[in-house]
Length: 108
Length: 112
Figure 1 (spheres, rainbow over the protein chains, first blue to last red):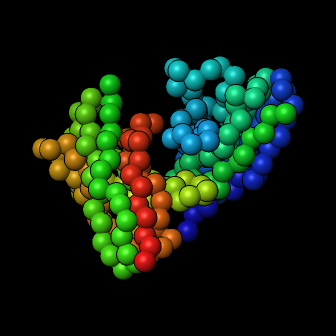
Figure 2 (spheres, rainbow over the protein chains, first blue to last red; figure 1 turned 45 degrees about the horizontal axis):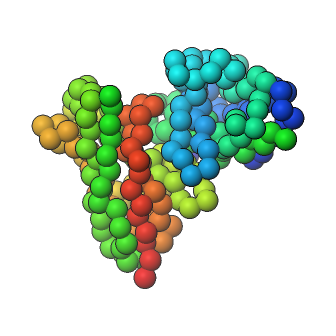
């Protein structure tokens, strides 16, 4: 079955840029989506279609995709950006959707 | 505004069955594919299934294929997930989703 691979954790100091990667064989032809989940809350979509940002999401969040890797970038990360981040995409046939394992972002 | 409200969660014994429902409002129900996603305690997100707006196309994750069935009633704006032969590892919060919109989740606990 199709898999998306993320690093388990990323740590940055306040004000630094955090980058979270997601690798998958179908990413060259399928969009990546990124969700943020803070402790005890439902996930929130922060990036869709590789690099589009919902209107309510701050500009500090951006996305890119190249080859088999998609990247979520958080510019000037702050403590309030801490949480788990999941990439989400579909296999080459568009039939099976899958989440990456999630990346825990720590800002300290 | 879009609202998705799940119901039907609860405690069930291994091997048992349960039906989750999700009522949608604030959007044209018949226009959209919908999905179920779950999250086990302390674990990551897992996509389970989607259904097309006309119900003609459905897809399932390998972990639930043959045990779970997704369906919808467009007239009543309801999405369903019928879960059979439940296992302890199916214990999770189950979310009904429409694109970026998620319900509040329904807790399913499978335990003897």
